[in-house]
Amino acid sequence: MYEKLVFPFPMENNEAVAEGDDPGYVIKPQAYFRGATQIPGSNFNVGFQIFVKPFFLDRVPHRHDVDEYLIFLGGSFPNVFEFDADIELTLGKIGEDAEVFKITQPTIVRIPANLHHCPLNFKRIDKPVFFQAAVMQPMFGGIYDTPDGEKVMKYNGPIQCKYDAAKKCDSCGKCLLEDWKA
Figure 1 (cartoon, rainbow, N blue to C red):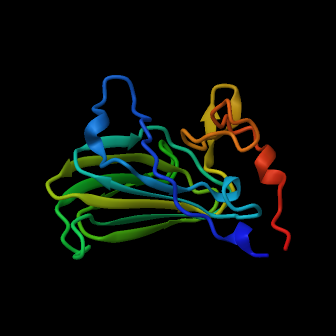
Figure 2 (figure 1 turned 45 degrees about the horizontal axis):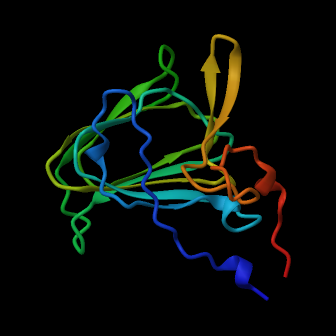
């Protein structure tokens, strides 16, 4: 009866890197909970990654209409407080109220709904960093300022489409309309 509420994590090898960047920045495989794609009705989306090399993760400022949480811990288990990295995160709208925060120890950042954030740059990593981005929405995505106005862009990773086994997810959103029913 409750089987739709239990979803084993699939392994992913997310290769999303900017042209010219080193794809070896993160340990593979990685784990992601892709929200409503995997558990119908879910309004939670989270990734689990261990960074081992410097990497400019998110160059483009954006916002979400829900809260997001960024967690930075040491990636040398079992001691997640063994942290040796320099990370920079910008909060606020660039050119208006932006502040750059330097993360040099285990940290959690709450990004309230509609707060512009990023760039996010893992500048130095001398010990692995466990990074988790959790957003309270059914599919990962953001609202970006473009020359043509605000644009919502969604990304659901390199997973298979839930409705068509022959194609990868294109973030169409059809699966977001499902709800869990006992």
